[in-house]
Image (cartoon, rainbow, N blue to C red):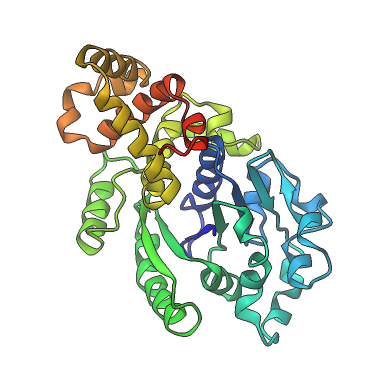
Length: 329
């Protein structure tokens, strides 16, 4: 059954859609089956994936109204990445959703027949706590807060957490709080540092070590309808989202099996070969991060990045799919 995660904050401009798109894209690149759901009538996720949302004649609205089957609405961007699109037409029926007897469960009931077809279902929520966000939380197994280091997003955290408690007590008892991701960071400023300190104090076990820096390449990628991994896989944005998604995946059973597989094979290699592989892994980092290797002991994100690059090298030596098909994990 899919791990269903809502990416949410009731404030626009925090990088929520960018995070949903690039998380979905990275997971698909790793071979996971991913469904990205656009629950915002602005259709930004749909557009970020390169589709003209206004030109679509079948969207999530038609699934809610039971006018179209799932397979006629879903957009298959590639073998591993599917999208349920949205556009402004949903606002015309949003009010009528409030009168539906099962109004909080429209998305849950839409996903139920297909969720076994995917490893991850990622939901991009609208920037408010209305019926569409409630639907997203009621359908999810977990949710993730996307917070930029500014005053208004920080103010939004408390009412959102209260909404989570309400949804869990009345609508979805299995819903869990997965974590907090900081986006649009510039830690040269005192304000970004202060916000991270506040989040670390309030969510000590939930704040991701990874964070997303403020970089123009992420905006450029969205403007041409591509993920950062398609647009500029060597960019700072790609590095940051790779590290976040690797951290995001850690509690997923398939990821744990694959990670253990490569940890075990690496430890079985002769010390000289281990050293050579780690040297290659460091050389695969961007020039910016190679220059930071002296600070490795104090940089958990950088240490993790080297392990990710190490496992990419091991993947070529010991293709995991070949061993897992034989039953070895």
